[in-house]
Length: 433
Image 1 (spheres, one colour):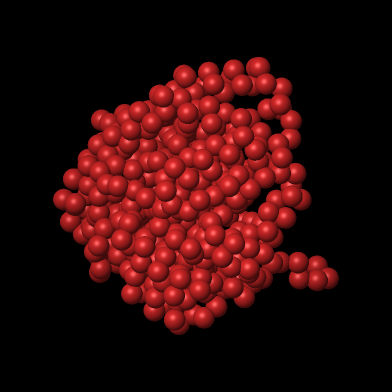
Image 2: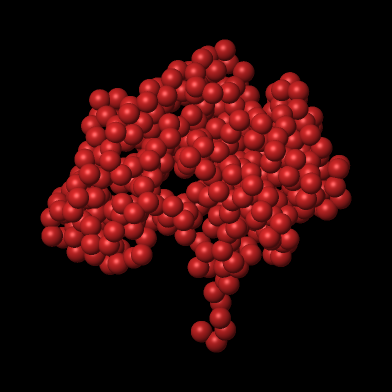
């Protein structure tokens, strides 16, 4: 073309979690049955939305014509007031309805957060990273995402020293991102570590982002939200209903802004995000109408507790299997519904392989295994051999570690155990090849 129309950050937009689906579909067309362990969609994986939640949704859709109309751009006032009241009861940062802004899912919110951040300002995020954040942040800055380590030797908790060292090294860093509970590791950060991150933000005059989409999905540990530790530091929490209800197809997420009155620049940045949303009219109305009705129902939190117990049971099963598999390093997850399995240093080498299910499957993955990402080689051999689709840690989660992420979503516990065992056997076979 006459002019270069490619965005300078285009090469940073990588989302292997879904890109691997295209490869999986091609392999499925060769006759291989695929087990999808790549995307965190509970409904697609077979979890049933409770009938009482379905009834609330259907009754609202039948009886309230307003759910077919535009909502106010920030979101329905009664829903924002409900969220603000619930947050304020947690005795942390006090917010008002006007501090809450709804989006069409958190992907929309995340894109807006980084798109309207000064291109010279950076947000440091965890490693392993969740690619929606890391890709969007890198693209906005036209430069690779800056990360701090999550330590696999310490339950995947943030390495506070590494975080502060990176902030000193990169004066362009203006914000710190936490994903808590974490995707892809399943870690839930102790309140002491959260407070240290807030202290660092205060020390270096930064803001904090906390992605809390899994904030109600935790087990075996206590979980605290950013609002409970933020003190006077500017920040924002990202929340939604896609994982909790679960209703990912609702595309219903929101930002909660904290302490905009404490910093003029942060207040102007928050206003920019709100102004940008004004240009899109509004977020989806029906899910906002339904949200308070579901969350106020006496069945809601017992329902979440039962789900969390199921995830904890499968986390125990997966941990037992992979902790006994030679060449692997694992931590038991305590939140969300993911688990990261690491390969020990030196275990992976070029030339390792698995026998593929058929020659067509091998031809499909040949171009993809020509990579220096050794965990990616394993993941594509696993897909072409066993039909199990997981996500490589290096290319899928912007990490310098080799491993892969699984989900804890398979509702049939016996089937889940079979899948995990098959992956473990594939690892052993691959390492020995």
